[in-house]
Image (cartoon, rainbow, N blue to C red; front, side):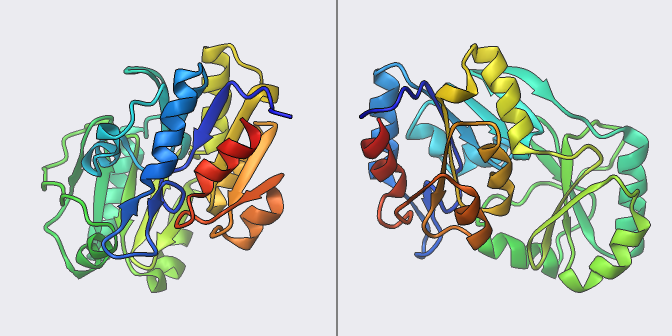
Length: 261
């Protein structure tokens, strides 16, 4: 029996983009299957920790035109090209964070809606991270009160015990790499982004699917009826999901779409 799925929220890294090979490559078969279900009227949203400029840089938007995107782990929600929701860090909080970073001789990337910037010249921590995530290194800018959605701190994990106690208690601090931490004053949660997208699209969670592999993707599962973990996902994600599909290498997104749609 085919399920009545009207909207799909799909993660990018390790879900559509295979990091188990070098150089990393997109799962083209799964992307083509997503495009097929789009033609049948099913909406497809990319749901990622990446901001807009990052999704554009990796050229995924040349392979598929999503109906919308949930970016920065829920910090931005787009329907088509229209931004329907975004969070912004208060200027004074970002300034304080920059002062803290510079006092520890570490760098910060400020993320705006369509681009990003560094507050200091690139260093080894930044280089280590960009080796793992090959993208264009953003330019250095003098900070003059620009509003940011969130930011990335380029600091080794050993500095967590120094940095975390100096942050406000309600700050979102998510380490995704030995040298990379996402920071925001308002928590960025993919599930909250899905709530906005469902409301804007007029679709019930009973007709929604989410596919992912990492801890941040668990928040998606609470907002949809059909929760799917990649077999290459973390154990906590697999445990939280209703379905488990194949790995990204074995075209897991395509496999679950064929099974349920």
